[in-house]
Length: 476
Image (cartoon, rainbow, N blue to C red; front, side, top):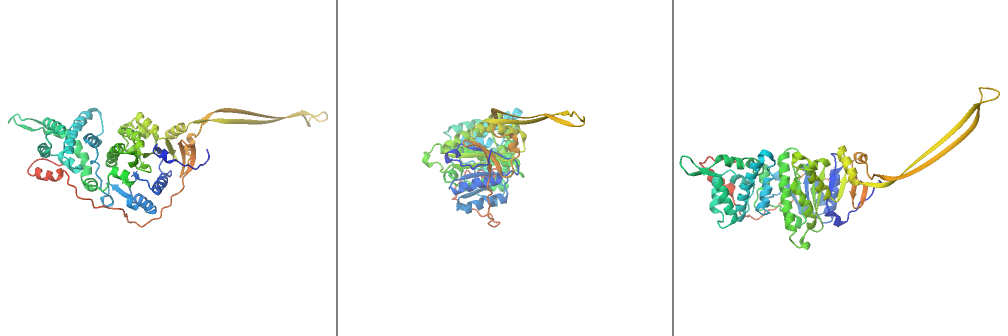
């Protein structure tokens, strides 16, 4: 398997690719090369980066400037609002899609599944009614309404009465209340209320306040994923996986759910209005935020001319039960990524599996042997003398043809930094990734910012303060 040059036709980009790489194997340089080529051809990209440091953002901006694409850059950084555009993942999708997006914050099963189911029904009723009210909402609004009976009563009063969503909300509202044994009046069942929303308010608070709150709560944000795809924007998304692993992975799940909605909407528009060239989604540390509901995204994205490129460290991480994944999910991801690329691996199991995926080929094995023999006997006149009595030489050659691994497991573990093995329609080949040299352009993180037109929202977070005065209600 000699070093080769790899050229992928444009139509193969939408067939998706899976990258496997251990830390320090040259993945970051490869991603910069992919980004560079995508920017050169005028394509758009969503780059989900698990490092989320200023140097990574600076490299992304440098690449964009080098190819006159700086104006297309958008940054989503929930850990540093000063270096981020605004984004609201709750604006697109129907009530069911947004409810599913919110419920991604609550994972688990067993004894928790009942309370999760109840919370899902409650969130669905609230989201449905808020959607029918026709005003955008955000995490702050949800955190407020999940903490306040008064806001629930406000929605009951202001919501459109002649809708199916209002009927469902009314049923949910009644279920939260019980008859007071002393007065006979209907009062809030605080225990049911707490069980329904307690865990959610704790989760949503992470996106309501602080740096993340400043990024994610605009009613008319600077970043919209559907618009970003249609306009070939360059979107960098930083995930603080080291400092805030749970918040970062939950946010990535919400974002990918929003992306799935955008892909669904792209499928309903004429082909000529879909992104061209193929839009690229790079997903670093994919297994940290992968979820079973993502499998259909790999199946649907192709028809929207979107290429998904997840990167993982080990193959087994795709079936990690602790993260809610399964072997079936791993098979779907492996089956829906036509191309695979592996950098140096440290995990023997991953190397073995990559070797199996590379397949086998008929190989000719040749064995040769040489032999020589000499015979001696004692001399007639002096027993100490030896006479050569015979001498022979032999040579044999055997050839056999059998199937053998195209790339052995040790080929994957012995790759040097910057070397890779590609598997796809072009065959199996060894690659050496060229180094992408980036000229440092100062220390400032200079990226486009936009003053968006003011759009009125539902404003429940602001109303919360008015309703909460003099009441025991809390903000979760």
